Structure formats: structure tokens, C-alpha cells
Length: 353
Image (cartoon, rainbow, N blue to C red):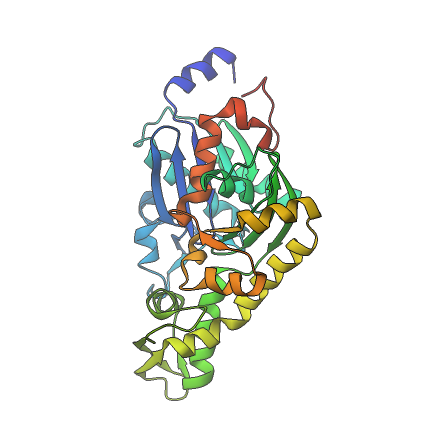
């Protein structure tokens, strides 16, 4: 593309930071904040594998279809464990979201910063670049999710201090100790909020012979899920299909039962945090005694997760303000403070930005 045309397109484009998550996609525009927060779900025709209704069946509308589609339609989540599982559908979803932020202007080719899991491969990272650029981005940069989350949580990541961030997303949990704008120690695992849901589904089927879907499991997690005992235990009526009779049925599940169901994935996350701490330089570890651990991501909203981690690590643990948007806010802040934060970008080239 010729330089004058690039400059012209730039006038009509809004640069944006994107948290391309397994469960939700968020877009942050510098000086505007979060401008889009939608489920990473797309409804497609099984016959053509094309997005329905000219791209309208994306996000909130598509999530309402999960588990309820007829035989010729599939509501799918095109990302799995933080990486692209269906390239074409991810590209279509990104195109829809980018156009929505631009209010459907045709002449828009934004520069984007996308947060990616710190443990993904170069092939997976290239897929993110290709999907974004084919969806309409004229230049794409990536940043490791823990760095974006740390920036969005307001941590002084560029200072010579140890900062530990634990980002519990939908598909991955990112654990990192950050100092001087770089990751000193990290653990990236594909155990996160989706695994909380799957553990609830498995428990209900194993205990009650009742099959429930992911949306129902998510509601159970949000309404009565916890990582530590509650002062007053909760209960919830759950509807599903009986595994033996095949008939619709309902049961009552307690928060104590859900907590037992969630124990295994929570233990995996705690183990990753302890492993990262054991690998941390002693001087940085000393900083964490005072600074503690900061939790981000939607999974950090599970009741008592901060207390469970604090009990197992003996480090003060807190949940960041608005943890769901930390990563997206971080990508937007990078664009807004580019002169100070450009070094955290992967593939940064001052001549082409």
C-alpha cells in the first residue's frame, strides 16, 4: 500500500488494543476506555461454515444460542485455551468487532495491539497476526498478557521492583513476576475459568446423573461458586437432562458441593503460583513480601480465590479493580503511552508504526 494512501486511511481509523480472550473479547481505545466487551462466540451455518446474518450473529447474540441451536446452525467459540482454534471464524469475529468500534465505517484500517498468552508458540502468534490483519488491521503488534494485565492493573512494571500478576482468564491462567518492563519468571497454563465450568459439569453428572451445559455451569459458578468456605453457604436449583432417563429434571446444588468440584483446577493454579515463586530471584521475591500478588481476569472474581491463594502462599493477595478489563485496558494504555511502553511490544518497529 502506498504511503499517502496509508496516511489517508489512518485519518479514518481508530487505533485499538484488543484482549482476544477465549471467553470474551474486549477492545480499548486510547483516551476512550473500553468500547467493546462481547463474548467470543460466533453462530455459523454448518452447511457453509459462514457466519449467519451477515455477521450479526456474533458476541452476545451468538452466546444466547449456545446449546440451543438447530441441526443446521452451530454456535461456536473459535478460540480454545487462549489460542485460535478456527482461523476463518476468528477472522470473521474480529472483523465484526473492529467494524463495530468504527461504527461500520468502510474506510478503516486500524493499528492494533493484541494481548496473547505468554506461553503460545510462534505459529499460534502468527495466526493471531494473520487473523487481525485479514480482519482489517493495517498493522498488528502483540504483547504478553501478563504485561498487559500488569499495566492495566496499575502496577509499576517499568520500575526495578518485583510485581506478581496472576491473570485467570477463560482459557489460560498467566502467572508472572514482572520487573523493569519485562517478565522475570512466568508460568502459563491452559487451566482457567472454562475448566471451572467443566469441573461443575462433571461433578453434577457424576453425582446426580444430570447433564448440564456450559452456560448453566457458568451461572452456577457465578451465583454460588467459591474457593473457600462461606460464612453462609448457598444453594441453587439447577435444571438439566437426566443421563439415564433422558428426561428434563431439576436438582438443588450447594456451594459446598461446587467448592469441592472446583478444588482440582484451583489447586493447579495455586501450584503454578508456587512454582513461579520458587523460580523467582531472591531479591524480587523479597519485594513480593511487601507488594503481594494481584489477581486479574474474569476467573479472579470467583468468591474467595484471593483468600485461597493467600493461605497457600503466605503473601497478601488482592483482586485488581475491574479485573475483567485489566488486559484490554493495558493494551489501550500501551497505545496511549507509546513512548514509555513501546518496549513491551513484540515485533515493534518504529519505522513502520
